[in-house]
Amino acid sequence: MEAPTLPSLFFCLRFFGLAANTKYSFYIILPIWACLLALKIFAATPQTLPIGSSKPIYSRWEKMALYLGFLALAGLTAIWMAYGFRFAAIPEGAQTLPIRQVMPKTPLLNDWLYFIYDYRLLPEAWIYGQLFVLQHIARPTYLLGEISNDGFWSYFPIAFSVKTPLPPGHRHRVVAFKGKGQQGECVLADPILYFPAAIPSRMNIGLRHLLPIYPFVFVIIGSIVGKFWQDHSGIKRSSVILFGAWYSFSRVTLYPHFLTFFNEFARGPRNGHRILVDSNLDWGQDQKVFGIGSKSIM
Image (cartoon, rainbow, N blue to C red):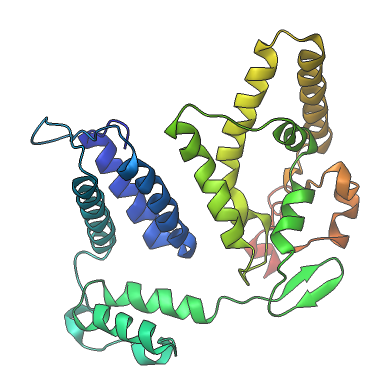
């Protein structure tokens, strides 16, 4: 968005397609992009084009048309490419998928989805897969000694608080992150929008579903640490060294069982099973270590 080029547009389209065809949580990209695009549309700075006219665009309506056009191109083209631009899930349409069985009961949503299906705006297999997963997204969940078939609203806040190292979390709370113009807003948009969207999810089986927010949190932490160090304050620099040593020590002592990490707030990995299980503790990572494979199990 800052200075679009043909390679950047290509990779944006390509990776959006990879997300849309592999991760059912990719929908959160759309509101994040919408917020970022709104910032660009209402900003006074002009928008440049990577191809065609070199004349900058100032009009909000022209910016909106440009961004929405690219989003439509990125979404439709990237998804269709994965299916070889073929609508029918089964070649030559010999048999259709039972799309009616997975349609939602909401009339308005139902009509909208039938419009997409009837006019073949997206591949049949992709539409069916999205609807099937949405109907079967709930999983049995364990949290703090309790089991629920519908998940817990407090699952991800608790998982984040006990599975995130305390030193970075402490530094994140000390000062507010201030990025450079819209770059800072872009960094903040993902965690601010993604985390609340994850809370009502009924797929509560691991912190791994919050992983998309961590790269942005690391950027924020890096900015804060840099500001601390540049202040030339003995107390601030000492705190950076102290927290860095604390963080490093907790990693070294846990080696090589990093997946089992629980911070000091949770009283460490030995107490982790009292709070969370599933992929928060074990995902078959010791099979190779102890020579346990599919053949020996069978």
